[in-house]
Image: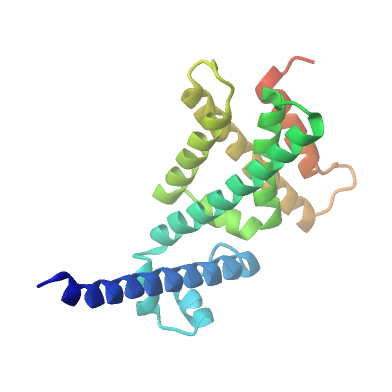
Length: 210
């Protein structure tokens, strides 16, 4: 078969691949909005219904819920990365210099906490214990390590420890906040997201030293 007869086949394959990717992205977007509105217990059947398709079609693009979790985690991480880059560039322009390590860490933690605050349902979904969570946290650790200053000892080890610490702290904060919303207690002050970010940066950079 020569190149002339092969080209149309390649063209059809490319169009089909593009169609599949567009369809997958559309289903992922529906899933994200549905989980944002209803919470992390949304089913594949719910996603199919909201997409106007069948559950079998959804399973063509996502093998199971863990696969959906991994793909949604990738999408959320990509969004966090874009926002982080923009925030660091804005900070550098405002300061007229490169951000200090503590300022970089602050920007990264702020991006993470804001992701959780803006959509608790989606955050709960992508951080449920599973291979999807492991992949999400591993990806964030690599991202954090890439932003650490040159000369940081064992940057990947530090990043893994920091991400685990922040993930656990944010989960505890969200749980306490949810319980406080259900049973308000005037004697208990609720920690704001900005206060949480400030505390986390201080604990990571200075420990418990006053």
